[in-house]
Picture 1 (cartoon, rainbow, N blue to C red):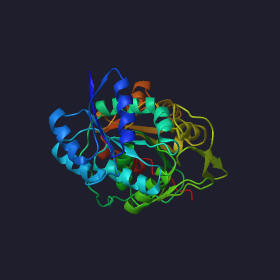
Picture 2 (cartoon, one colour; picture 1 turned 120 degrees about the vertical axis):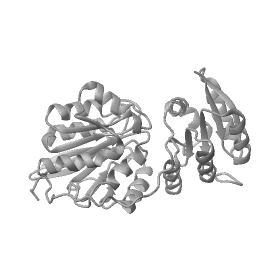
Picture 3 (cartoon, one colour; picture 1 turned 30 degrees about the vertical axis):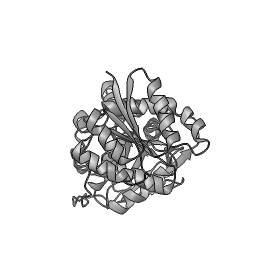
Length: 348
């Protein structure tokens, strides 16, 4: 299958570089490179591209406005071209809410050289996007009013995700009650993006959401997000569970890695862990979830129908490390039901 790609960017340099990258891939065909939303609209109507790369900052009509209209009129897998700034991160997160599949971060130094270094990443992400499911724009909803008879620090909920995960994690956390057991999260994101993402989640959820700095004690009513470029580990410290960051090599191709987080839990808190693996490309988290499952953790995976990309959950299922496979909208309810059944914990 040949993937029809449309590039939308106001920078002639970026258009040229991305065009060259797309043309270098034998399984891709460049249908056009548009400098603005109006040209892009015409090309979408003419060629119905399989994947669009879209700049956020454009003249006349900005990328977010174009994306919102595109998803209503002609839903298409979109990769955002994002800057690694707080403003760029916030705009990218909004784009993911509107239905974009993923994003490609612009290199900070030497645009031409940086894009060349990202060549394989860009090609891979276009291929992933072409196979992904476009989800409708998500509407903010009030956090679930479900309650949990839980006041302890014994249980830990661990969540891992990648492509499509920012929205999946948001939906999962919105459905957790304010006194939920502590939640640890690894989502594949670069530095800066995790800072903005944690703030965004914190403003929406009943539980508090923070980006991990290191040394935090895991407490109920709080979610702890691994920062970009650091692995998140959980360790036993006396009667407590505490968080540690590790600046060590990539694992399963990622940093932070879901496998690192899951494996650390397998070593110190397996029987007290509820592990959840959500949408994402690749196999990160599958081996770690299998280890947790073998040692008594309750493990859940998102089903194919509700995933943007059914990669990580599928790998975990195939390894035999999953107790239940559920749609995203049933995941939090299943976790709460399980915690009720085991009477959670009572140690503070």
